[in-house]
Image (cartoon, rainbow, N blue to C red; front, side, top):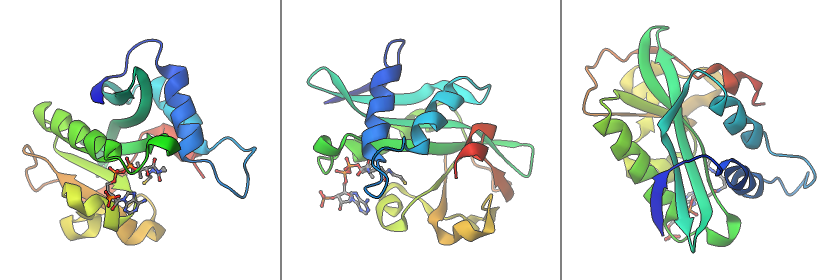
Length: 174
Ligand SMILES: CC(C)(COP(=O)(O)OP(=O)(O)OC[C@H]1O[C@@H](n2cnc3c(N)ncnc32)[C@H](O)[C@@H]1OP(=O)(O)O)[C@@H](O)C(=O)NCCC(=O)NCCS
């Protein structure tokens, strides 16, 4: 397995990974919203090509993660992480772990200040994330609660406080 940046031609394989990873057993015919989210992000000004990373196993895309431009307090540029998905038949083999370490290190190297995401604390705390309220970062929706997490990077100044807003493409995700 290795990681690399997304490149032209990966789009459908990435969509297939998220379609399978986020499939809801109670509505197996519905396309998970994460598929459209990634496509909408890719077409938006908030897309950051260097932070769309795939994991390749046996020559095929087995996982994908992307960070896009978000803001804190309307003006401070930070990152929103999502979607992160690993093909179901490749899960629990540390591909998600590799993608998380890869995208965090890439963002840190790019002098980004902070990454925020919505997810389970039990999974993301190992990568240095903490419920965002601990850092003074207010979730985009109050009901996200502690599942909305943030991780400061090397360039964080401590001024990254206030309401976080994702790229507009996230507005369509239920
Ligand atoms: C979440 C996801 C990306 C993890 O990727 P993965 O490659 O399966 O995870 P890893 O193998 O790197 O997991 C490492 C460890 O994290 C833990 N872990 C994995 N998935 C977890 C989950 N959903 N919740 C809590 N802990 C989890 C396990 O303890 C695992 O350790 P193990 O070696 O004891 O199994 C993947 O399961 C996935 O695509 N899920 C469906 C989509 C999704 O929920 N994405 C995240 C949205 S927030």
